[in-house]
Image (tube, rainbow, N blue to C red; front, side):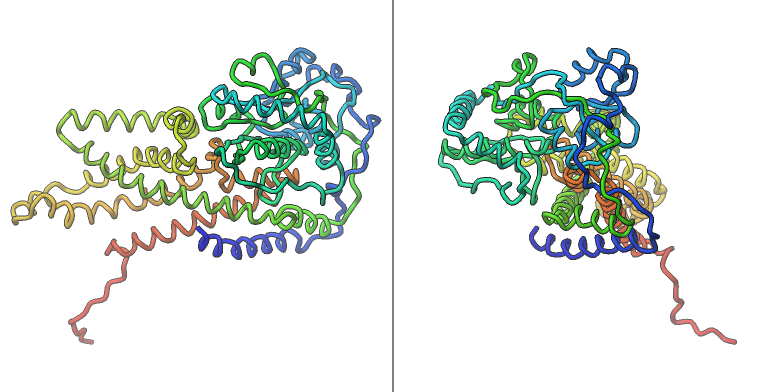
Length: 521
């Protein structure tokens, strides 16, 4: 892995530079607003009261309780669900929605980081945020309760608040990490709710992360932070994939049925986010804005390394799944071609099930159900899941390619004294490969692109890392274009390699040279 990163690092920097030059070159002095907003007031808000927006399309954070409040206040408004505040902000600024509810501390951070948005200062409802604990680990709730109480009394909580809610970025550092003697506690977090929880320098940081890390280390535990989408936090706790969850989580009676909550560590509230015409940025030229955007997305906090790490995970999952899927697919092919029903039928059922199940659903079933009680690496689970899916398609491709070979050749080989193994290995399979490889190439490329869903099971792949960058910069252009370009290059390399292999094994595609014959003129 280290060697892979050493190769990927310079390549990514080169790609980033090329993107920057392409994006900035040849641009005129067009003026655009930067993402450095001025102080916003309620004077520029479109709606002075949330009820005025009834009937307009609203956004809702998936897995939150905001849909209940929105439906109560705006009964005639259709709802669109988003996986993160970042996506909701993009939808608001692009006009897809008129507003959305947000946690008050997160709303303040969103306004500071984005132009054109604001929020009504009057809270929709008061709220208390808690740290969730698995019902299988009640002792952790006791430890968190005692730690939060102690922090409130001795002023530590106020100190942590001043660090993460302040404006001095140099102070926003996590406490030194220490290895505990009582074991490791898996802490799942949705790091797109700054300053409560977010990613900085490739690590999970923020107000809640600081609190949890301090308490666990004082209790003698090692904290292992895992990045999971907000909607997957409770399933992760329920399935045993995590022991603690955090991410500005409201304490509700419904959630208490599945999760133990430590005492509230922050008394906040819910506010209504909407467009704000007063929250505008300082005008800059297109060149200056693109340069600033490039710097924010890739240079600040060494964010290009996130892309590097994500690409590494994508490559590992893709290659591992392809190799294992090819082996399993060959086995399925042999079973499907068997004349014995007890071998053929299970293979047919497996293929039908895999072809009819959405990959993202099957991936979550494997992670949260099949391997829910194990400590297997999410990357290993993803490789197995994608390998099973690929085996179903590759097995059918192999069977079709083999069945396409004239049976007369097999009969002739038997007549010449070839065994079944010799006939298959020397006559049938070489010809079948020429029919299989073009389809195999397309399926391999599809596999690489399909791995973009592994973020659902806490794997920080290329797409997930792009989302993390967007959650910090609230910009889409550079992260998404870079991600698309890298996927294209990976697919191109794979296609070129397999095309070369196809060229080498297919004599029809190689130039012919007649030797030993003298042509008379």
